Image (cartoon, rainbow, N blue to C red):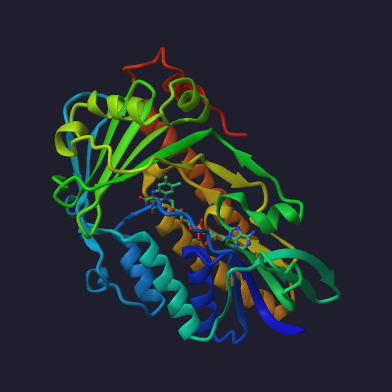
Length: 365
Ligand SMILES: Cc1cc2nc3c(=O)[nH]c(=O)nc-3n(C[C@H](O)[C@H](O)[C@H](O)COP(=O)(O)OP(=O)(O)OC[C@H]3O[C@@H](n4cnc5c(N)ncnc54)[C@H](O)[C@@H]3O)c2cc1C
């Protein structure tokens, strides 16, 4: 049986950053398990300016331009009015963010973790885990072999994304705050966005667009799951008509029929426990944020930093995860819910529409 100090389920940004932080803190035996999604389109391509500093703290390249990503200067939004408002990171003294080639970004973080000593098992998934007197016995399987390997680990990390596969299997509960979905299309339109992301609200939700390095543009229609179905937004003709009806988006990114429409779950959700005896959750598994915030990657890296401290303390003292980590998670959740409510409440033009009405009255669970 393999031995690990820490086994991390999920090698997205949160999992890889946790592995990198643990290795930097002197933890030698770190295993990452990832089932390797085969989705053709990756969502989540705008990184806020603080991401660079967090990468630097992990000893990684901070100038992502050197890795083929492009600067993102901020956001232009039509929100609450038809007048565009420009929010430049620089004007807030925050430098610039990035428009990422997202698959490459995630693969780079994984690769760096491996280079520094993490063991990556992929494609592989957690099949079962059993508590031992000190730590866990974990069974990891693949699509073809349900008992690929067994690993004995002292601490487990749930970095498995918004379904929190490990924490929920250990009895924690996910609380979903809404049913937002993203219908994403990658187009070949020439990006006229000049390094800005675009957000434009409409009666049933909002649109997002960003020019990606390499000339493609990511366009997303965000709405609630039931409204997507009722309005047939996943039908290409309806999707394109709704896009054509936008004020600024259609002018800057002309609707084209080149791409497929890829749906993504984009609801806000949080775990009722940030950690338990011998386990801890990070990234979307802990708090999955509305893409409106463009903060999921920064949140994942920040959770990883905090989790490393808690895990190292736990490995040293063979103790329960720190209370400080749970308190931090609660503070983040409260700030997130307040901020999101405030932002959505600034759009009052379609109060008769279920999408906007729900967001004026929503109560967290
Ligand atoms: C439509 C949309 C747009 C977004 N836009 C942005 C944006 O512009 N900017 C931003 O910062 N964030 C954005 N986000 C959020 C951002 O993508 C996430 O917050 C970020 O990816 C979280 O990283 P993570 O490592 O926690 O989870 P993930 O990136 O989801 O990684 C989880 C990993 O776990 C693996 N996994 C899952 N289950 C298992 C299992 N059972 N066994 C093994 N492996 C498993 C998966 O294969 C995956 O590699 C967006 C999200 C959505 C849905």
